Amino acid sequence: MVPREPVTAESEGISMLIFLVNPNAGGARGYRVFKKLERRLLRTKTAYQVYVTGGPGEARQLAARLSAEYEGESLTLVAVGGDGMLNEVLNGARLSERLRFGFIPVGRDSDFARGLRLPRTPLGCLKRILAPREERELDYGVAEFGGDEPSHHRFLVSCGMGFDAEWLAKLYELEQRNGRRSRLIRGGLRLLVGFRALLRAHCTRGYFETDSGQRVEFGHLFLLSAQLYATEAGGIRLVNKVPPTDGLLTVAVLNTRSRLQQARLLLLPRRKAPESYAGVRVYRCREFRLFLDEALPLHADGEGLGGRRELTLRCVRRRLRFLC
Image (cartoon, one colour):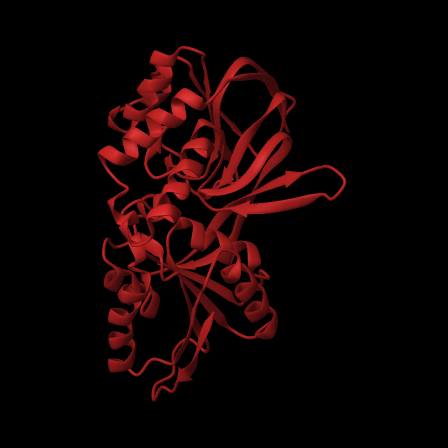
């Protein structure tokens, strides 16, 4: 990680503004994007600090240290990168009433930016952070794992199990292998990786139980996604609308072993009513426990969490303070 000394300001604003930058986001564009934004910060004499991360996990460590260091003071942590970077900051931060979050997406596949309708340009997002129209109180989700060492993981967009996690894992491997050329992993190539992941993905039996006592069983679970916004995994749409900040998870399940129906999943973003698609079922709940016969890959906001057979997912209502 590369820290930068804070720049002094002549005018009062946010008491402490800290940017956490993923330099490899958007095909190694993250650092270049921030350097352009930095000119705006200097021109407006805004006080800030910036940390450029050097690898996975560093943003989480930084967020933990900084939120502890400034506990009791007003602090804004701004993630510059993709949804995965924002997820790391969220999981590391020690939440409090005086902690604010901001997000400057790098690239075009941010489901969080799409769901929250953030400005389409990094500069537009920076302007919102420096002079926000509102401070929104957002929900977030928590995935809890049992076992010998119980743990939990927060998410802002979705927590998915099955095909989407497999697809995202293959894309990540390809990005790591291609380095700076990872910006080419979009469009047709992204779809090709998706079809290859589809051929390797498998279904399993299982069920989940909600906090209201509902029990849902399935014989051919291909994908399950607990969502806080309408799209996940870089644009997959399994639900048409997700009510914002109501304290509930929208759980979309694709239960089919038909390869044809599974393949159509990749075209769902073009559908007006994905819930009407054969094999897709949608449920609403505050919390549920999932039990599978076989382990399936799991992700939270695109970050791989290994294979899981059992987990608990729940929604925490309006706990995050977000500048937008």
